[in-house]
Amino acid sequence: MTRSTAFLPRFLLMLSLLGLPLAQAAAPLHRQQAPGYYRMLIGKTEVTAIYDGFIELEPGLLKGASAKDVQKLIARMFQTTTPGVQTAVNAFVINTGDKLILVDSGAAACFGPGMGRLLGNLKAAGYEPGQVDAVLLTHLHADHACGLRSADGKAVFPKADVFASKQDADFWLDENAMATAPKSAQGLFRMAQESVAPYVASGRFKTFTPGGTLFGGVSSVAAFGHTPGHTAYLVKAGKERLLLWGDIVHNHASQFVRPDISIEFDVDAAKAIETRQRLFVEAARDQLWIGGAHLPFPGFGHVRKEENGFSWVPVEYAPLPSKK
Image (tube, rainbow, N blue to C red):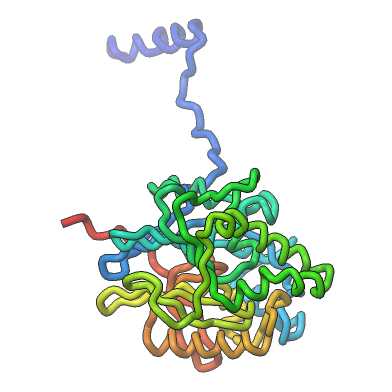
């Protein structure tokens, strides 16, 4: 035994007497993910997916296929249906360099604790609500619009103009339509009206007819069916294009393989199916980037035509090019 090894037992005894740990403790469990944002470039335009949270979707809400077939499609993608299929809620920030545009605003507190993370993740991505110049709504359902308004009724985005299609605004903001709607649907009307109220009061709620340019490089695309004025937004920069398509797909496991599967929330299911089939064909043919509100976060990817139906090809994680 050398002098150095002979010293080791006495050193360990001293540590023990002092009550000091003899080995490094195991790392603690953190039980949280990284902040929910992911960036990509469309030309020189930076688009950031912002995670608002998730909802557990009941498979029984999917229509047009037997319950057995729906279960098979969901199981094929290794998804669980207990208590429901986890379905992401995503919003997107378009930074053109001179405008900061938010597409959809998340659910805030309208759908329980699984959602309402948009503001925290927006700040983690480096943006403040007061920097947003415009909010483009794909439609006025609560999981896309409730985040516009704070719990005390104020505008969350104090400098922003809020845009929605005229068709959607005419439907959801109509008091007579709400009064004649089934009682189970009246809450959706009320939440839509309350969400935009601060912007209506300040003259910053604006409507448009889909099909034109709203801002440089950002145009609107009619995608009716899920709601009467459901709208997608096309971001173009150079040869690159990204279609932020809102609620064209609610469940990627079933609706890409079977575009004819609709969902209970569709106002016009036949029109929603027709729109989904059209956009799938266009997206696959033109190799468009897609950003989906209810596709697995970050919701970016491509649509691929298959022998039967289509499939979803998600983006692969990649760093952005360094600034030159």
